[in-house]
Image (cartoon, one colour):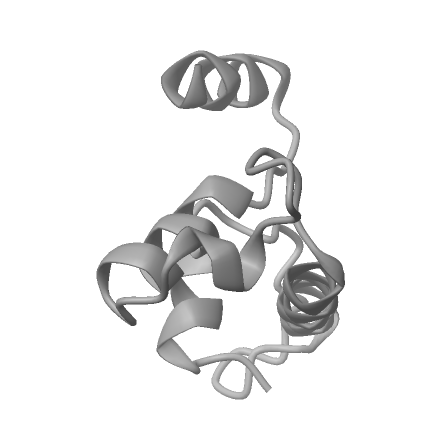
Length: 92
């Protein structure tokens, strides 16, 4: 499904923020159990994870709208690696 979404967004030239990459990072790299960021149904995100997701997405949007320091040009696209940068702490 993730590959299908990525393919469709590339074909239509639209940005996508990879929420799954963020969740996978929390579980695999940060070793968080699913119960920390999923609601009691085990499927939907909880308040904590929605808050973290919103901050990461806002940072990715702000980064895309901030002029590049080297060129002065706006970063017009969020880019495929926005979620990866968010989990790595590379956004503002």
